[in-house]
Image (cartoon, rainbow, N blue to C red):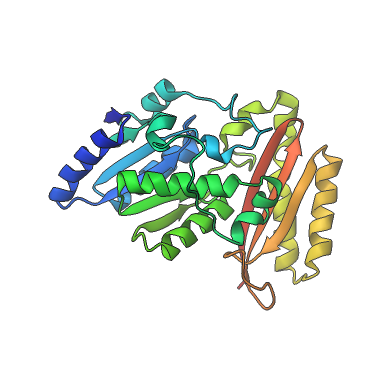
Length: 282
C-alpha cells in the first residue's frame, strides 16, 4: 500500500493502471476511519482491480462555527487500519494540493435545490464544499467507480446527481450504514459523546424506526408522525433539527410512493448526530 500526497505522483501511478486496463475504485473519506469506512473499502475491492482511499479534511465544507479545528486527524492510525485490506493507494493531500489556486477557491459546485434542503438548510454551504472537493478528488484520481456510505444519504444523492449532470462517467455506489449493536450509526463524531450521552444516542435510530413502523402500519399523516418522533427525542434530551419522510431521491413528490427514506438530525449535548432509514413497503 502506497501513500502519496501530490496529484503528480497520483496521476503517474493512475496512468500505469490505465495502461494495464485496470479498473479503479475510490473511497473518499476525511480520515479517522472506523468499521464503516473499512466496509466501504471491502465493497470497493469487489468492484475494481485497484482501490484508492482518499483522506482529506476538507475546510470548504465546515462552517465558521463548526468543528474543523478539532476534527480528528489520525493519519498514522488510519494507515494501520487500512494495512492488509488490499488498498493500493492512500491519497492524503495537503490543502494547497487540493485547492491549487488558493483557499477558498473561486470556482465551486452547487447541486440545486438539493444542496439547500435538510442538512443544507442547517449547514449553509456544506454541500457546496462536499460537491466541490469530491469533483476535485474525482479529477485527481480519475476513478471508474466511487463508494459512499448511505449514512450520509443526502450527500450520496448530491454526488450522484453531480456526476450525472456533469457527465463524469463514474459509477456511484452506496453501501449500507454500519451500526453499533445498539443501532447507533457509526460516525467519527460519536467520540465527542460522553458516556452518559452515548447511552442515550441510540434514540436517534429508534426515532427512525418509530416513523418506519407508522408507515408500515399505513399511516400517511407524515407531519404528525414525525412530530411524535421528535417529541420522543426531546424527552431524551435531544434538540431535533429535522426529522422528515422523503422519497429516496429527496426531490420527488411524496404522494403515492411505497419507497421512502426517513432522515433525522439532532443535537445531543455539543454533538450533532444524523441518520436515515429506508422504508420499502410490500
